[in-house]
Each structure stands twice: as C-alpha cells, then as structure tokens.
Image 1: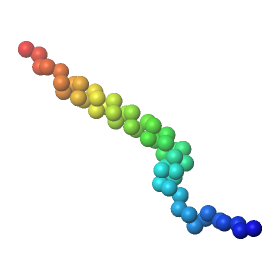
Image 2: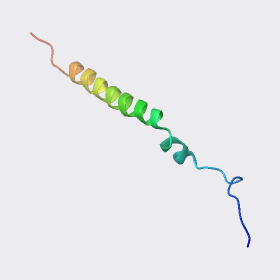
Image 3: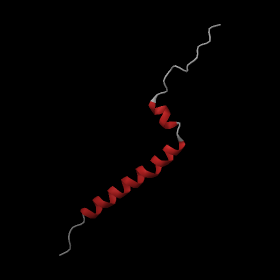
Image 4: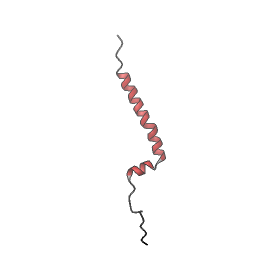
Length: 51
C-alpha cells in the first residue's frame, strides 16, 4: 500500500489566515471600527455649515 504524506504540500494562505483565531478576532474588531469611523468622518464633513 502506497502511503503518501502531504507534509511537502504547502498550506494555502487563506487557510492559514482562517486557522488563526486571534487574527480573526483582531480583524473582526478592527474592520468594523475603521468602517464606522470613516463613515462618521464622512458624515461630519458633509454637514452643511451653519449660517
């Protein structure tokens, strides 16, 4: 019986990223924070000036 080891096979990058729980936690906190902050700044900048 031919036993083939997959140790020489590279793990895809996306699988390495998805296998890291702390990286996923970091991205899950940082990405919404950045989006909401950008959304807030854009909202503030588009408010018309008072007369």
